[in-house]
Each structure stands twice: as structure tokens, then as C-alpha cells.
Length: 318
View 1 (tube, rainbow, N blue to C red):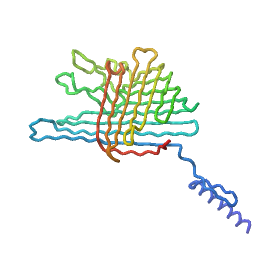
View 2 (view 1 turned 180 degrees about the vertical axis):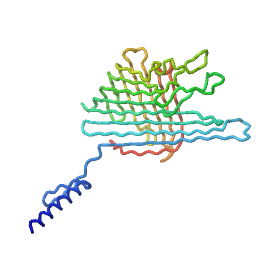
View 3 (view 1 turned 90 degrees about the vertical axis):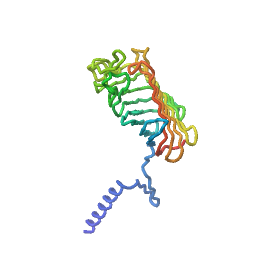
View 4 (view 1 turned 30 degrees about the vertical axis):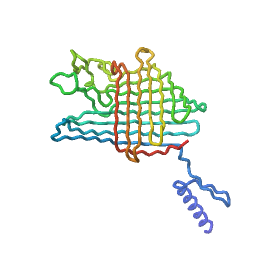
């Protein structure tokens, strides 16, 4: 009977210890010394920055003239970086959406979805082998308002997944410090998607009209996807504090299809942020895009805003 009670007691202690181990730190016992060791969860570093910008103007009996207007914009940047040994996994997302309303007419002022994920393996102090995936498109429909037939106020030119681009890349990365990286990918297949046939338009006698039989964003009529298998991609990224309250984030991409080296794509994204106070900041954003499949000339998007901002970061200072 004593052996039975002793067995029950030992089993109870074992099961209690196992249950406790699932919710408690790992415990190492060395006779008189007991050491509590928590699992290392510091491999992940994360940051988030979000901002809301609001502008409003109204006029009543104002002899100088003016138009009532309301503008609202949202900007969000997030990053999650995993580093353990020679392995790194860097994920970033840049999102923005803004609208302006004048005389009851609401138009889109800014729109972007950009997500990038890079898996790297360090081969030397400043060199990595990497594989990456990039996705970019728009949140909402975009319209053209000029050079239209007299009976038409706007014409759809873009939408969610129309266009969208998914790019994969493998290559070598040069990272001389914590705030700059340069990635060269001799093999970078890209998928361009046009999932809405209504964005296919053409110019006829100086006005734009809808035509489902034209090429849109490099995608042939009747198709929803264009695949470029053999291409080179060069990426440069910079993220640096210029002062106590001023920082810059910039990203440049070059994309060259080996079959069309006379039509190399270039894209530059830059955001300059100056913090006025803990929750107030000024942001200047610039996007330069040259892609012959999208437009014959250089495309420029520029934004300047003052608004509420919130940021949090677990990145370690080096």
C-alpha cells in the first residue's frame, strides 16, 4: 500500500511538472542551485509608423474667391525583421490612401500598396545571398478627368489588381551598414496583372475612350497576366535618421527585361519625415516612375502633409 501511494505521489509530481513547464520558463536544477532560463524571443525586431492628415478650407462671402475643400490622407509603414545567426528575414509594407473633395466632387489624391519580403543568408560581414518577393498595386479605383468626351466626367484607368505586379528575385546583397543595402538579382521573373478589362483605354482624336482590345500596362487584350521570366533587378534601400527628429526612407528599383534592354524600368520612392512633437509630424513623399508599359513619359507623385502620427519600434540601437 505504501508503494502504491508512493507511485501515485511520483506520478502526480511528474504530471504537475510537465503542465507547469508548458507555461513557465525552462528550469535547470543543479543540486543546490536553481536557474530559470526564458526562451530567447529577441530574434524579431518590429516597427510601425502610422499617420492621418486632414486639411479643410471653407469660404463664405469671400471676395477673394476660393473653393470649399476637404482632404483626408492615411500613411502607414510597417517593418518586421528576423535575425538569428547568419539568417535574416526582412519584411516591409508601405501603404497610403488619400482623397480630396471639392464642390461635392471627390477624387483620389494618393494610393499605394507596396509589400516586400527578403530572406537572406550572410556569407561574409557585408555580403548576403538572398531571395525576395515584391507586390504592389492600388487600394481603390483611379480615374482620368481630362481629355474626355463631352458627355463623360471621368474614365476608369486603374483599380485593385489592375494593374498589380509581383516580382521574385534571387541574387547577392551588399550591406555595408545598418541603414543602406544594395541588391543585385540577375534572375528576376515578374508577373504583371490586369484583372479589370475596364481600365483598357486609348486616345482617339485627342480624347480618351474605353477599348477592351488595346494593350494595358503591358498586358495583351484578352489576357489578365503578362510574365517576364528573364530579367535583371537592382534594388537600393536607405533608411537613416538625419537628425534628432528628421528621418528619410528611400527605395530605388531598376528592372531590365533581357529581351527589351531599350525599355528599362526605374522607380524611386522617398519619404522625408520631420517630427514636430510626439504625435505631430510633417511628411514629404515623392514617387518617380518610368515604365514604358505604363506611360511614355516620367510619372511623378508628390505629397506634402502635416498631421497626427504614431510610431512604435522594438529595433535595437547598434
